[in-house]
Image (tube, rainbow, N blue to C red; front, top):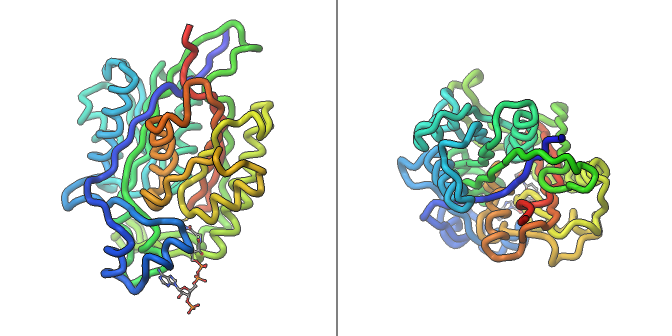
Length: 329
Ligand code: ACO
């Protein structure tokens, strides 16, 4: 018998407050035309005063529990990927556990915009290692709290939100034919590029959270190369090729990056999920939000092969290949 880790359900949450490019133009010297042309973003959502990352993460978790028709008490692990925790400690996942009123092991993973693929990799490994049978992997970020409204090059790009997936461990003795679930994960880090995307403050440095700073052109080049290369690596690990993949879900940072990655990998545009127009860059929430959106729109279906790709500060990046859902028989 061999263990397989299914990705069997999704849920998401976006704050009610929706901010258009026209709204942003009243806050910094920019325009709808510039933002759309350079990034593809039209809207983003911002948390309201008093609304926390854990509130969004809890709402996304409740959705996936409801959509998957499971008892919340059966969840063994909660992993929240976030860069914008409620507090320096305890972890945001701990608050989610309290809100759900369950006994799961709960902790955060911090890999910025790559946080979801990192947390997914940790969740898969822990389920395989026997820490339980069901794991919630949540990406949640309130990026609006670390935007510098004096810097128009970064403040126009980000939004807030949360997305969650359910991982379930199952056993199969038919391992050669059973290819459902998370088929491969690859994650990478290169600290040599720590200064092209970072915050200018933190607990140790300034006792503040700091604001986002970015060398946009450098990030752009690394993103196209690293998203593409890590995805090929993940495909090889899963013994699949691009033609096997039904849907590609790249990190939703910028439509131009998404287009360039799609072209480099030879993906037809209508096989690439993009929500950047509606959500902006929601950092760790970007992939699970886009996946949940695609499922709700009846694009991604049970049994589809999907590719996930993310990159963020660090630099940290990675890709995953998944056969989504669960066998029906
Ligand atoms: N509104 C209007 N004008 C602006 C704005 C703005 N918001 N921001 C910059 N400009 C101006 C600049 O001042 C510059 O003017 P100048 O020519 O008179 O000097 C001009 O627009 C061009 O600026 P560039 O920085 O060269 O613009 P570029 O084409 O590189 O686009 C962008 C900037 C969108 C940030 C781009 O570099 C990019 O997409 N980078 C990828 C990074 C990214 O998406 N990061 C997201 C977070 S990281 C992640 O999630 C992986």
